[in-house]
Length: 251
Length: 251
DNA sequence: CCGATTTTGTTCTCACGTTCACAAGCTCCT
DNA sequence: AGGAGCTTGTGAACGTGAGAACAAAATCGG
Ligand SMILES: NC(=O)c1ccc[n+]([C@@H]2O[C@H](COP(=O)([O-])OP(=O)(O)OC[C@H]3O[C@@H](n4cnc5c(N)ncnc54)[C@H](O)[C@@H]3O)[C@@H](O)[C@H]2O)c1
Ligand SMILES: NC(=O)c1ccc[n+]([C@@H]2O[C@H](COP(=O)([O-])OP(=O)(O)OC[C@H]3O[C@@H](n4cnc5c(N)ncnc54)[C@H](O)[C@@H]3O)[C@@H](O)[C@H]2O)c1
Image (spheres, each protein chain N blue to C red):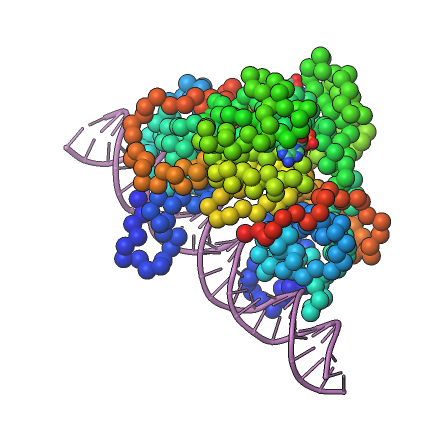
């Protein structure tokens, strides 16, 4: 492991068990690749093999893994099962995390029906919605419950992760309720910037943004020199979506 | 704009109209913030206002915008409408992009029902699935069509963006078909690393990975010094998902 | 037991991204 | 008209991340 003694403020110098964020984001990818290899009956894999399966450069993969410890064997490679467990432990998916989903509309239904969570260390303990017409509906082996029950559920099941799939309008309010109830990690699908207090982690998944990034590159491919250069405000597409400029300040 | 003459290899030196990837990823966020401000009847906004609405640091926002040109006025701020148009043009959402969705299951249905695309420069021209039982089903004002019609549709509607919402197994195959048909940008929801030829852009949205990143940080919050230190392979959670180690090499 | 071979873990360097800090430029008030 | 007061645009410092390269450690064959 990297020593941080005689070196001044020096290089990155991980502050003891601090794994770079970029690495954290890749660990789940490695975990999946290892699972795939394991299912194929492969017991040992080199960094080259793993890197190929995970779609990254092998030097990067080795450096990422070195933050966790020395789990490989020189001249041989990595034991697939062993490394898989070590990564799973580091991420924290060897235990189950209780999750609530708020807003059981189109997207909420899809997530509720998705089987891929339970098999990966996450357990959906409640589907919540404010719409009385939805409350009571059965989805798989679960039932939609009233959003008002949030606090009781979070307490009872020690829920630490909340998923927001409501429209943008109520998202900040829902977020505040989740935080107040004790949820400390939030995955947001609504197209708004949510503000949360320190100590609460938030990640967003935003389809429109992904598509727009693709569009940007797409435009470069085809257009190149065939685009109008700084035209003045013509009629533009309706780009409307948000009801108003939501809550407070971002981080 | 930054001159790149008498300076040697020098600083970042954008290669003429080349916008940093990190900036590209934030432009859609700014666009949304501007739309929100515009809808609130605000005509002018300072970088501070905008940064707050977009959830970023104002220096970063100013630098990002400076890559597009000098669209602000010192001492005043940015004209909301004008800047909004400039960003929309830069991203490429002043024109409509034709999109196909492949795999109309839980997630595909949700996307098909989502109204937020049409209003942002994207037009879903086809919903495709290989399952004969699904073909013909109506979703909103669209009808699910056979995946075999892909090539014809891509040609007819000049489709450049494809969305994959099939299970992981067939995803690479579907991806190859899309590319062969002429699609050059792909948004993938299946939990696999897809390989595509040069010139094709691919982005992935992966719920499980997002949750796992949250879990990692969550574990840090509660556990801290209370975690077992490198235990030996005990019974672990089923982390299975992929059917086997998919296609070829990643980028 | 020793050397050839393989593959990890790590160091070094470069590129990229973020943030600070401030001169340049605009508006408004006197 | 001239100066005070803001706010942009950007140069420079800093931090993080990516990739090349290689020494250290393990296996295997003779
Ligand atoms: N459907 C998609 O494919 C898609 C794609 C991208 C983004 N999104 C975003 O995801 C979010 C959900 O999309 P959707 O299509 O499922 O919307 P939806 O309208 O179908 O569902 C929203 C659900 O949230 C519930 N809800 C509203 N206010 C609530 C509150 N205060 N507390 C609890 N529940 C509340 C509603 O009753 C409804 O059931 C939206 O923000 C949307 O912009 C959706
Ligand atoms: N549902 C979710 O909330 C969710 C969450 C995270 C990730 N995902 C991922 O998104 C993908 C879709 O999930 P889902 O729940 O909608 O699955 P699903 O099984 O409900 O739907 C998949 C659809 O793809 C179709 N399909 C299968 N093979 C095909 C082929 N070769 N060509 C065209 N169509 C084909 C099937 O007929 C089916 O309609 C999966 O890869 C899943 O892992 C889903």
